[in-house]
Amino acid sequence: MNFSFFKNISPIYFYLVSVVCFVLSNVVRDKNIPLYYILLFLGAIFFILGFFKRMKNR
Image 1 (cartoon, rainbow, N blue to C red):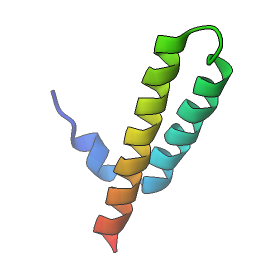
Image 2: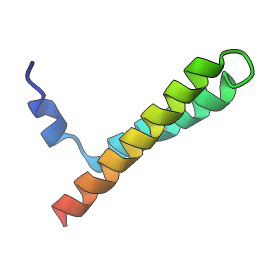
Image 3: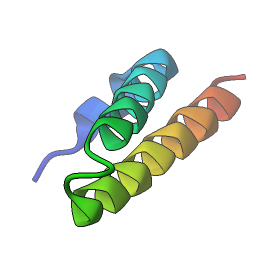
């Protein structure tokens, strides 16, 4: 698989996806616990990816 498109993405998009994951996790918190934890984990991963991408560009 070719993951070169991740190199061209702006850090703000990683942060945006992170916020969307956190909001969705809070919406499904009471209904589906495994999905809640998966979305929390994905939100944290995208936040960290955005942070590292921003630090690398400086």
